Image 1 (spheres, rainbow, N blue to C red):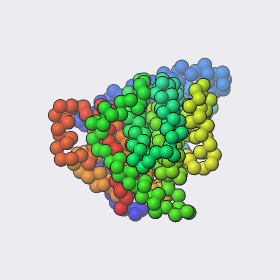
Image 2 (cartoon, protein in one colour):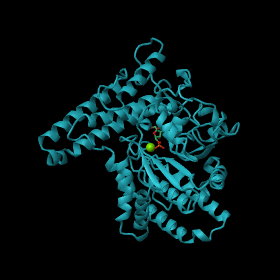
Image 3 (cartoon, rainbow, N blue to C red):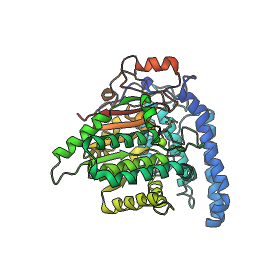
Image 4 (tube, rainbow, N blue to C red):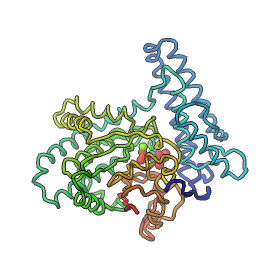
Length: 447
Ligand code: F6P
Ligand code: MG
């Protein structure tokens, strides 16, 4: 599999800024500078804290980081060329190789600038430069500029968190009495909670409040018509068949490629617990980000922090969840990974070549659940696909194991729809692909 050439002409990518009516253009022009401004404000606000912790050295580092970020914002807003990374972080060489590759694609038209490059590439690049601004400036090098927002999302979703933990602990009590049909219904419910949990991301709202306010379970029925592709039955079959063919030594393994911290992460953890408790799976592997990413994406710190918060919560069922989940990690039936590939600009069709170790690891899974919009963009290469192109084709040879995307639509890519389905929604709701109102549970079997 490794080394297979799957690249397509550059013009097929969603461009960052050549179509002024596109969501990509709006993102690069308005949303990204807004995010950068918030990051700079956050650093300003923590000045005293840096001083208390590290003295003058902390304040100096804060100033350097701010000046690096202001320069970055200026480069973006004045459409300067995207420059090679100058730091020595472990992924810098891979980034710079990718930059060269983009340069070669520009057919001698000079260095690709922010607005002339593919959207996915420059957006990822911005988050990588934000990381460099901090990582290069000890002693504040491990400060996560998005940490507060992620914690706030969790606290502001408190009611929904309580509702979900309470529902789930109640379900666990009755789990052994459920017949197969009921078990399937419960799985479908929790898949939907995890799907709609993806509405709560902070990059989409450019950092504004995006928490889950109401009970996540109540509205599921009403939201069914908004699931444009619903392959939940296929997921059930995969899991049930995996169990049947499972021998004593081979465990059924499900992987969740995580997206946002806050309420979405909680919904994923509940789903993961259900998979184990119902014995549909024996192991769940989580994949998070190794650096702060797209404002609200889950890092190892966020993952552990969330479980600790639950454990110490002043609510019986929240803390029960936290205690059980800590136990799952200790027993090794839950495993957390954070490979650097997830924060590179490459789409997933390049994984086998760029990160063969990760690809080989995913091949061990019975089912991969990819959460969220960015993962969908990377699954489909962020191309301008016709909506009726099969998902399998858009995956462009990325088939490590059976996989499924659980994603609310927040960017201009959608494949695997019935002929005319996309056009029909478009006619009445031009914003359908970027509003977060629609969702998909889209499955592809392995080869
Ligand atoms: O800013 C663009 C974007 O990639 C959107 O597609 C999406 O709104 C957001 O960032 C990330 O969404 P998610 O957290 O669901 O991956
Ligand atoms: Mg995200």
